[in-house]
Image (cartoon, rainbow, N blue to C red; front, side, top):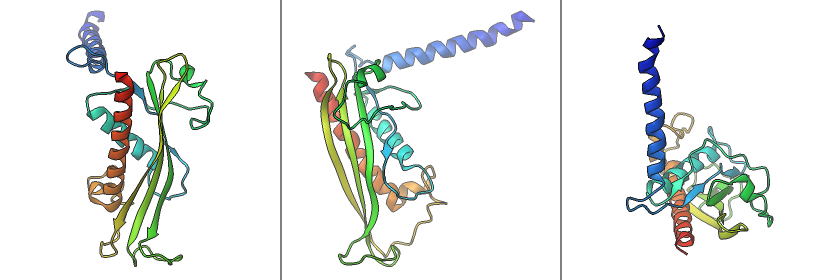
Length: 213
């Protein structure tokens, strides 16, 4: 009976070995140079925007995927990194202990996500009766953990505005929400993708610049 377990055990060990090998190879370029090792905890969402899904999960997932897809940076794979301190305060002393296995950590905060009328002066309006701008702002902070003390290499507010004309039919985001094939073609899906790409580019540029020094 015990011999029948051997093939399954060997397959499991082989799968684990392959996964570890694959992870190790992605940490390095083909010429052997090490890629920057980065962790991106879940985005903090301080807006009151009511969506049928988590905007934090959506933006975090998109930004992680876009930074990883460049092939220049190794994003540490883990479901989530709980942050016990305020990542945007002046105190950086706790970061090296909390993220001891990484070279860089990226903190994100969604501080604005609001549809506002494209014409000034309207306070109370139906978003389906007027053209709107989806105003979005994300606070970005990139910390270099390689030295004796953590160092800020990027700190800025990335803003974007996406115009949604009133001629577009209203989108039912409970049916065409994040995760569906239809979502990518919706105004919000396009707007979020553009903003996430811009943020990912900024993160990648500054990390690669810091790594080269």
